[in-house]
Picture 1 (tube, helix red, strand yellow):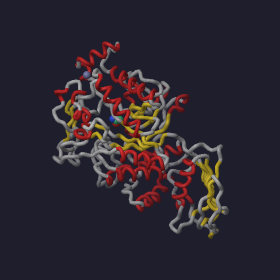
Picture 2 (cartoon, helix red, strand yellow):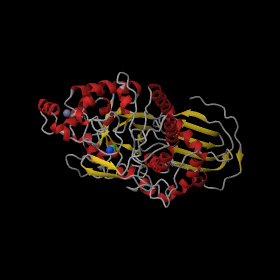
Picture 3 (tube, protein in one colour):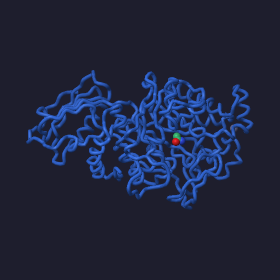
Picture 4 (cartoon, protein in one colour):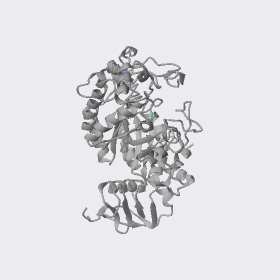
Length: 501
Ligand code: ACM
Ligand code: ZN
């Protein structure tokens, strides 16, 4: 990058307010050296230094104006984001020297559009806010029991039947478990939902929008469970098609026994066709194939699944999930893609290249054969993204003094979100396998963009700092002070950010 002439720089009297208060940088850079004075105006000058990491940067604001040094466009982009937070209301910038780089390469935000659909404009707002906080992975959960959100050429039934549901749980209704794989909300609202889905041009637009912000879009196509929207479109892909009585996505939340039949060759054919399209539209090197919460009960009774087990020498029905995952991993590997899946996939004999996403027991090492903790997955050589539900599921309520968006269920306050350490309890030799984490916005109880912002912020700021700085000597009271200022900044940007407590 060529050095440009600085347009105009003027020294103005010393600032007495400390940077922590006036700039309230979130996430806090690795090294900040406060200088005296501030710069009134200067177009940044860009310099290259190949010795810096890909996402690292140096930012100097001082007598020479504003100088950004990086080895790549991503580093320069993050410097510009820091600069945006340094800008004071009078348009000046405090003089400062910053050296900065991220702790983790996977800094993600998960948005579930299966349960509720937010649409392109909200997704773009999410991407803008992600970029502002230096996130680089948008994990897009696009398929669920309650909704299928992409229009795959040649498979029109997917959106015709799968993107619509007859109704949804009522606002405030509590979900009860009646028996295994039988859940019911206290009441359903009687309001048809959908059709809601993204066209190919929508998807390409979002991918391009994200790329401009140095964000990779990792699509998630959940299989073989959470598949009732698929089965509404293609009942023959169920072990027992007669169970699929309604040609619409499922109206209630939960886990359901009807899943994809792994004994049916058409299931693989269907999945390959969907994944061909997904690979065409999403350039991501990683494709998320879900894999969570898949009951095996139907596989144990289904003649086709039994025949598959016999042919493949599998002893238990649950081994069918590992068999399917491996098939899909091999198919995607031929296209140069790598699979990622929830920690359930690690219970099967899947290729070591598979990335695990630990949501049940990321940080605790002990586990049985069915429950592979994040730490154990890493020790077995899998790269891991750590999203333990009790520390990263920001759909949980925040424990606020007053919360107009409150609901029953688990509580995850800001301070707990901030104390999260993705590599806690992972053995030293396996720590290198920990790619990072995600702010997870599951949307059963997130009805619209206001709910979404309220739940996401400020906790996603905590995640931004954990992923950028961790391990770091940041103390919560310092974060809280910066967040008081930063929250006002978010509110001025139109974000429905919740209070800190
Ligand atoms: C999950 O929360 N079922 C991944
Ligand atoms: Zn079957």
